[in-house]
Length: 459
Image (cartoon, rainbow, N blue to C red; front, side, top):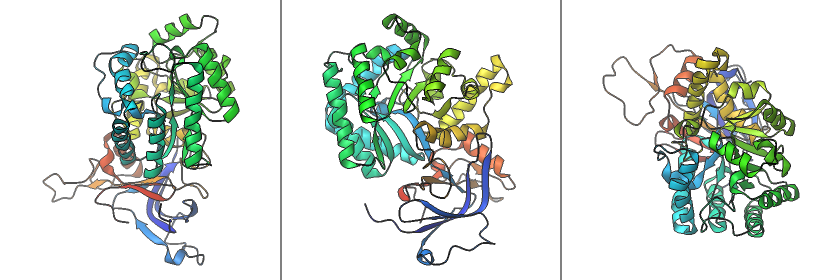
């Protein structure tokens, strides 16, 4: 990749100060050094000057578009890269039927690398276009295709956790691990590949990926727990997504106290574990997850599409759990985390209809889950999710459309968020969350490198 240059970003910036509070700087200046990290932040460029010396006089300048702002990159804590062609295709299926009808046939085709390359290049490009700077990807059981996904993420500059899916039962015979030994061997091969292309996991990180407890034998889960202990590589899996699944886990693991206890008993419930869905967790299970400091990926669009249920996010937060957002493509219909923030708001309102208004999430809270919450989930809270000196410049430029007094036709090539003048920042942000899409994302940077831009953007 080409060397980076010192760059100064001028214009409004917005990020989450806390779970419930946005920090809005209308006249900001942010300097990003050659290593892609934020070197300085000026909150009022009219009163303060860019630091003198150290080459900042020759720095490149990026100015915000009118009515736009810089915002941290989104973090997708749960997405199946291999399922992208099926986005929006879930019919009337529930989870277990959907896996057999749609998912396993598609994923098994990734034994063909040309198919994998076509899909993986597309899904990485699309997630970047939606402002996703970090993604936790599930691949397939295939080592070459999983390694290809890691290569594509690195070449396109997206920060990614890439996991080879492990499963040795309850899946088609031609699409499952032959044995516990092959599951560990192949998972280790994918870990070794990432170590080869990114020795310090600066951009790409391998992640141990048991699909979910029903698809793994106790022997496989035991071995994966040992692999985690030996390598320190993080873990991602599913838990308590729908009621038939929970009943199946109880049947398959009768000696375990709960679904959560299954993972805990095999050494897979740790501070580096990401648990997707978490809809049907008892208070005891939530306490255990908090005790182990494991993390939660909330996937509201998928949970609704597959009629899985409504996760009680307010309860999870109140019980001290760390929560981020996941698109869960292709159970989820879109690779947009902005859409997930919107869906999370709507799901919380459906919960509130029966459990009281305290269940509602605010716009600020949804954006926190999409950024700082996600950063905590993936273990990178000190590097991404906000704008602070020393953090990586993982950011997106969001542009909003001004409707002029003489405008009598729809503008072409601009995003759908319309500004009529006089809106306060809280209103602008809410309009973006509820009505925006990828057309509002003019540019995206990861570690200071431009990884996506639309025609309207000029650096």
